[in-house]
Amino acid sequence: MHGVISYRSGIRVLEIFQARTSLKIDWIPHFSSIINWTYRIGKGLLNDVKKISKKWVAIADHSIDIGRKQVFVVLRVELDIFLQRDGAITLKDCECIGVKVASTITGESVADDFDEIFQKAGEPVAIIKDSGSVLNSGVVKYNERNNSDIEIIEDITHIVANGLKKQFEKTKQYKKYMNMLRVGATKLRQTNLAFLIPPKLRNKGRFQAISRLNNWSKKLIDKKVFSKRGRAKKGTILARLRGAFSDFKSLEPFIKNFIKTTDIMNKIMKLLKNEGLTIVTYHQSTKLLKKLPKNSKTRKTLRIWLERHIKIQKEIAPYPLPISSDIIESLFGKFKNRLERSPQSDMNRAVLLIPLLCGNLDRDRLSSILKNTPYKELKEWEKENIPDTVRKERLKFFNKNIQKLEMEKSA
Image: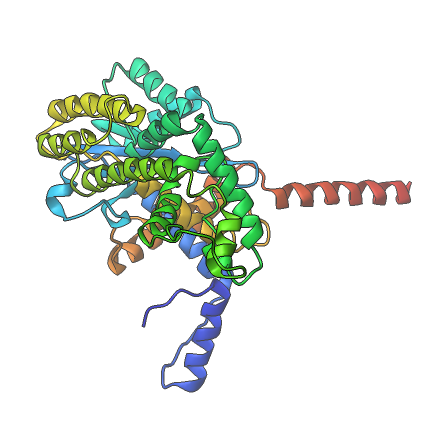
């Protein structure tokens, strides 16, 4: 049987097996012991990082702020990964080779982290990253320090999002469309038509999740929800929808262009994420781009990206080039999901769970790593690498004040 349960629940399950089945368990550990075993394995996996003979690419990114800290993670993916499997890269294809926690992130600190990580893992032929300036500065500084020529691969999802943003964000029609959706969502919320509310888009990275809005708009147009002529009967679903989204019909030409552009970008991303960038997928992508107008800013943005990255692919190796950092976003999502179960979300030694979420880990290797990673080493790593958590700072504050009060009483 396989299932996901909490550390405390694990102990209860063992007690039930012992009491209700023929299984004899000599010793049931405390849940804190299981937590420590997990973190020791995470630390052991980082200790076990070695140089490899194959060419590989690094995928690097910082998590969103959790508490006052961020975690910087570097994954290793072998360059011939698309020859080994069919489809996009998964966490099983990755090895976590670096985990760093910090309160402030700069290009200099990123270069320092790369120095330490690549000293153990060797140098990649390229680093896949988002379009953030800090990571870019870190790679440039690392190359200058070490006289290296590691290529920078810009994540295609961020590039497409930037292209869509340039094309649509400042136009009157887009602003009118966003305003209509906000008003319409307010009118439908807490009614029996709430299931038709458009998806909510976050303020940060809005165009990275724009496909959700694209799919919602496409369904309304494909099903011809607003196409019926004449006045709708009062109180009907159509009348209420027209009242909520009053400008939908007049904005339909813009919405159709928006859908077409987004659909083409999604097709290109799906192609390149599943097959990598090669001369074949390059030509397939440029063919799809030609379906957009020549003055399309999205088309121009992606065309520049394709020209630059096909040159990188030709220089590095005769393999399909990975061009997406989606997998590290997925990793952060899984990690955040586990971290937020805590009553106080803060970046602590739980970051050692991250290496456990990657690769194929068999029982023998896990046993060996656990045996060779003592608890003392875990405590030393935590002391050196994890800044004080909110909980530790609170304890320090109250302990300090309690001691002060006791001294005043004794005086």
